[in-house]
Length: 534
Image 1: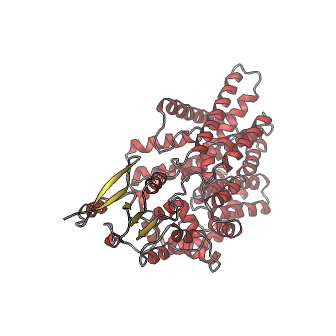
Image 2: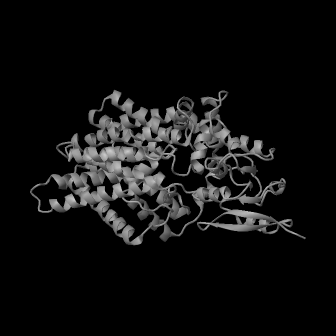
Image 3: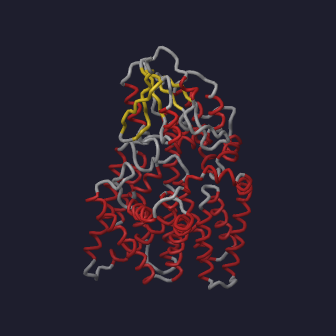
């Protein structure tokens, strides 16, 4: 079994490194480069409001480090425009892009390397959870967990994403393992390590607060809500972690109303049935993923595997609760349940779609993988059971569909994780098949930056970027200044993803020009501008 896991680990590492620059560098990833380089979005909007014809190289300067900008500029950019994103990953990226490079491959390579830390952290957590607490006599759950993490399509996708979510997986596992060690040994040094890991997690992603609540609930329920020494030690360690994070909390509090405006998209309402469907889809994607475009892919394959995954997970938690000590199953229940319930109940009660984004469920999904690792371990070593051959088959299916998913992912230019900008390759193809084209756009900054990573420098642009995170509100209609089209171009194209009704209405009311939609994979993002002849 250990040899099989080592092979799976080698495969998983290869999948993480292969074709790093193949997929679209999408909206969110461009903001990673923007913040890490020390620029603000407002600078881009102000600069291009005054320019005429530019090209992709002019946009790319905001994706690359400048000698005059350092870590302080990265912190400033985040603090005034993106306070909901703590700075640790961006500071690391700032150092990385100055030392290694700022290309798409280089930026994603940082995430890949950080994501590899999940394997030792998972091994430590499994030892603390299962072996040290007597739930399993040796290290097999740790090895199974490493195998599951290695070829999980969900983990591979986020490992290759130039965002902080791969690092958040690491800090979640690390903080949970540190908590279990501190509870077991109850020494101040170990509680200090836990406080440090909790602080690192908070500076990685704000939803580490939900992980901390899960940890606190675990400690309180173990102590039966009494002020035991362990409970008091946990309280002190948590307060130290909160105090260490307080500088960024102060910045967040000062900009709270603006943060609510920037993240208001999470409040868009969604039908309750669609929420449930998305939760099941997220769970299934942990093991199997053929969904490149955000739908369910081939239903004949997808639905049985997703249903099987759901049954496997329910069985894993049932087995865990029946066969392990309270100190084991309670941690898994709180770590899986509290982050999920916090987001799901918010959507059900207040409305919204927070719980439809898989990245917010990373702690929950890690707990799910831990439970499945334990279930497989127990049944694979039970040689006296007549069901052991079936469990070997189940394990083979779990690992097999994961490998197949990773192969599909490695060869694709787009995948559901790239929520926006999947049309970029098609846009570029249209432009490259036109002699001397001009692309005009008043799209959002992130869309233009994303497109700039695909555009050749020979294509001219006239752009008026719109803000996503800065304080320049901008009109919801079309910016008329972009229609001051220079002479001498064979064809003029208008690029604007996710067009609002107001924008389309203003486009239809243009007097001197008309816009002809160019169909690109059912996405309304590109129009051909034709001058009206009187």
